[in-house]
Structure formats: C-alpha cells, structure tokens
Image 1 (cartoon, helix red, strand yellow):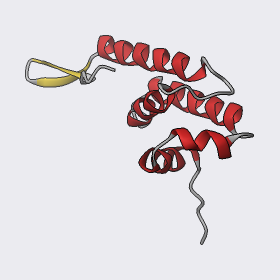
Image 2 (image 1 turned 90 degrees about the vertical axis):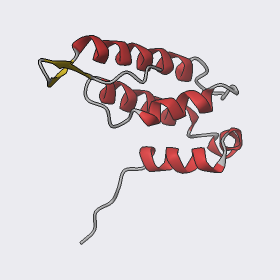
Image 3 (image 1 turned 120 degrees about the vertical axis):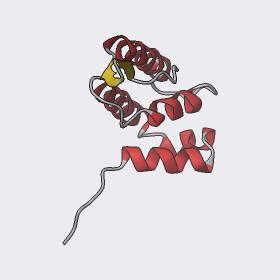
Length: 108
C-alpha cells in the first residue's frame, strides 16, 4: 500500500491532498477484498494483509471506517474456529490484532 502522505505543500503550507486520500483508500479496499475473499479460512497471504490494514487503522475517514468494517467482518467470520485460525499468525501479529479488535474497557 502507498506510503504517500495525505498532505502536499502549496505556497509553503501543508494542504490535505484528496487525491492521496483516495489512493490510500483504494489500497485499503483492495486489502479488504483480499481478507474477505476466504471468509471461513485463512490462506497464507491473509495475515500480512491484515497487518497492512492495522498499520492504517488510525488514518482519517473514510479509510478508518473501511478498515474497522473489514476487521469487524473478519472477526465475525473467523470467531467460531479462532483456536485453529490463530496458528496462521505470529505472536506479534496476534498482539496487534488483539489491540485493534478488542475494545478498551474503562473502569473507574
């Protein structure tokens, strides 16, 4: 996926580039399709695609919204057999997924 910045410089000022946001969102949609192409299985390429999505989970909307939807759908379709599916991921990847998929709890 593109490492292109959202910003471009115009007259010495940083300006949001809609074109760059659209390019990044296209990449996210492509990864979304890859992740959801095997709804109840995890081919070898899916963990890396998920990690790329996770890298951009804090991007601006509509990118963040698309990533959240993709990860939510992945969780829904793989939840029942997660004890088997988790073997396809490294420990680091599992930690990253847990950080993003599990909502934080706030207790006083």
